Length: 459
Image (cartoon, rainbow, N blue to C red; front, top):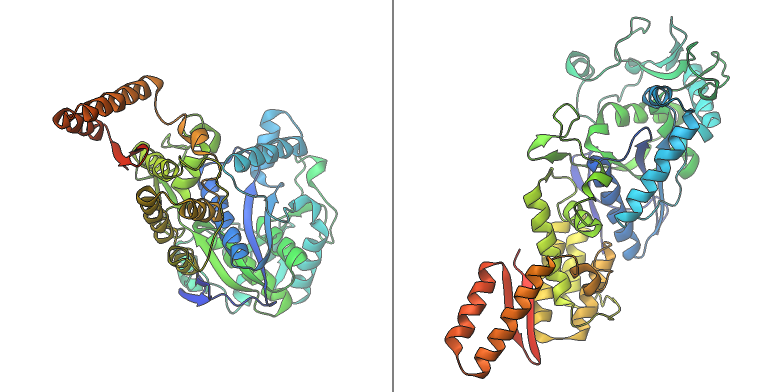
């Protein structure tokens, strides 16, 4: 068993070889908590939830860290607008984040450090950078990282310094020596509240965003670890800056594997407030059940774009119903995985290949089809067990399916099934076939089995 992961840094798949045998240390950039989590956040958290679940399923010990940024310009502004303290605001949205992730079956990370609780290691790292000549205090009193002093800058994004200077997102500030330089420590402004200012060798202030993750990851996982993840939008400048800061201090290669999940689009458009298609998790969950949303997110390969639409959600619901309908005769079955079973091996091979959930989920549907044909409790246990590996199929079929179809349609379907049974008993096969065809037109597949019939919606 070898897990292959696409490393953004090398732009190729590489085998995962933990620095400490048998123990994977993973850091993922988490939320800046000034608002409710949106679909992009849901994808990032669900993707790395699947990653850590799969690593554990393969027998690895995992230390998973996902940070919380709880001091930031947007947070300070939002707290002022709401007339509340920064801590009160961030506590509120951290609680909301936990509610949203729990609804989606996303397990909490092993460690969830808050930036405001790790100021000391940030100051130590900044001091080291200043001493090494990699950072300086600018004319405005901020401390900036001197990007051109770090030879490897740009290798994660694959751009030269000149390309970055010409067109990328850089912090333009006349006080800096170079527009590419980024802030490590922000000098306090008179209007900012006391709760977001800390003493430092450069005067009272607060950390910049990038230094937070460098300091917290090293504090939690050490100066070198295995996987660093986040959304594709963080590749530059955030992750590029993290590398420069951390390796500038340690002089060592920092992270073995860089993983980035793809963007979320809404009806093939970029999700943004200006377009009116900005969707929070809790808004979506008003009309979609949580497991369907989780299924929709994780069945796409994590590096591919994900397009959210009503049609895509309906298809996800119908597909998930097919899996639950295959289990409906086994409501009490306990999931278990025999990794020697050929279908389990194919599932494992797909997940080992850069967490290829589309291929792995194809195995689940093949398994559901085999279960419908064979009525095997062993296959039912395997289906539920493999689903559980990725955080699915843990409700009973009745719990999931009871909200799948309006009651009026359920009654009509039950009536048609009874009429068909009566027609077959009377040897009126033409009527029985007509009823089956009518059900199929409504997307209801009917299969005769010993002892009754099985119904499932066609995806």
